[in-house]
Image (cartoon, rainbow, N blue to C red):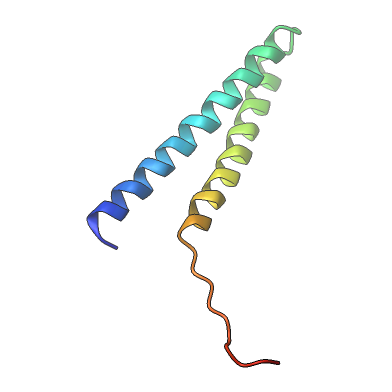
Length: 74
């Protein structure tokens, strides 16, 4: 990997973490309005961060994936 691709990957991963955190905070704020207890609110937000981060990391990895196919039929 060259330096520019490493920078782009770090930027993409940082953006994925920021987006997943922002989505989780938005969900947490909406749940807090309904009087959800703090422990349950924290558990929900942390699970959302993990889920959104996993999804976005897979998308970041999919950008750099190369698929090789056999040229022979059958």
